[in-house]
Image (cartoon, rainbow, N blue to C red; front, side, top):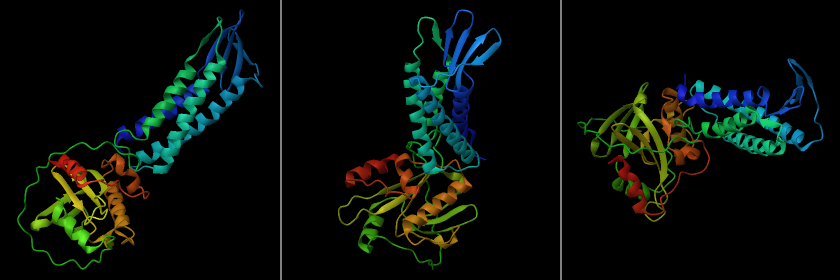
Length: 327
């Protein structure tokens, strides 16, 4: 099951939203012989322990509180779904974004509703409005907290110092797996000679990856060793031609998948995809299925979710600055 730090924030936000909307008072007014308790679910007049409804239809407060109640219940439901998926070790990416927008709307409408309620000198604000607003704000942030989950924002990349050692050369049979290549051979060859950590070929195993890098360096990486994945594109200038790559990061340094890297993508669940980028997405999805703690670098999240292209470096200098994070 998913790490508790990933599913607990949305669970708490959902529970507090329900508490603020359905249980707690937003305004309490002293009515002499009794008190008036106002909340989005209605207005009650209480004399001692006896209470009865007092409708407030037609007022600005009635409209705004009803809107806050509807948005808040939708937000709580959305956060409940996010909690469930994180608990089982994954994340509904676009659903999480929609829930964040609902939470933002709930917080905004709740704030305006509280202003409309404005208790006079005989009334005081209750805890309900504040709890609702704080819970909604927590709900906005919960979708990207603690690693963000699969393809849902991720966490900011933390530089990792490479301590990888060079293993003895390993004899390998030539790969028989075809690979789609979205860039020309000139760009692929140029990138191979210019970037570090480039994977030449490799294969998937039950526990991870067995890879051969440049200069016949071999690395075996277990799914449990992976801590982060990131995707970028090289600059548009020749000979790199905006070529995409994916970094698979471990505590002992990264390996870098290029379009020229030959892996047995046919071994992935669902088989080989029609293009390299989709193969990378399937590979990362499999890795996170085996190890949900793997973080998705924040700016790469939409790429791995199947959306837009990976962010591109405008110049080679910017790529070198990025690459130094592994030094």
